[in-house]
Image 1: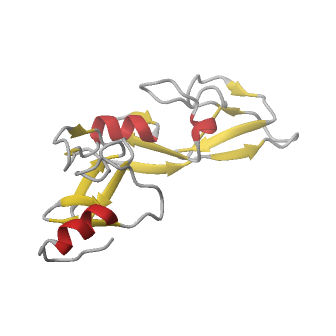
Image 2 (image 1 turned 180 degrees about the vertical axis):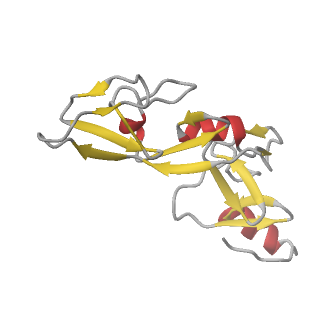
Length: 155
């Protein structure tokens, strides 16, 4: 059985009278002023790294992921184990770690999220319309709506 786990990383101060702890990464004593605590163990700041890309997880953020005895950053966890899908506009694969735009049940690459008639890209707060599963800007929607089309679905 494979268990996925999302774990937080804490920076802990080593008290001067405290006995040095062993690092779960290198097995050496932690003599630094600060150490990381994750997965119920202690680590040197340089020893808690992603098993794939070697990025330091204390710097990346406060979350790490584990699966199959691997310690991973969010990006590599999603790349290896995340769910992928296809873009509703171009039908190409969207990797699980990539940022996307959503409209109802459709998912789009950021670059594909544009009016499908005039290719105008949308900014945050812009009004767009989803008509017959096509993304339309307000101008193209109103042109089509005036020509007898139906179904107004502002987003």
